[in-house]
Length: 84
Image (tube, rainbow, N blue to C red; front, side, top):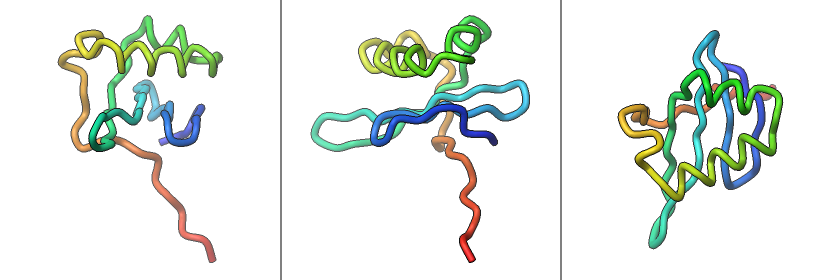
């Protein structure tokens, strides 16, 4: 899993071979994370554009029907390597 872009306390865009995932924070009374497997059009849009990745996360926050059927549970994060 490769981290492509991230904005602290908002989203992470990750790539795992040909699959791309966007994990973002959401919530009202409590905060929770949502991971979505991106489709080909979304991948093309965010591949080299960090601004577009943040905009896509905002769009997903406003309208959950945009990623209906593509939510990944549990949420996906890049693996942490221990520090020596």
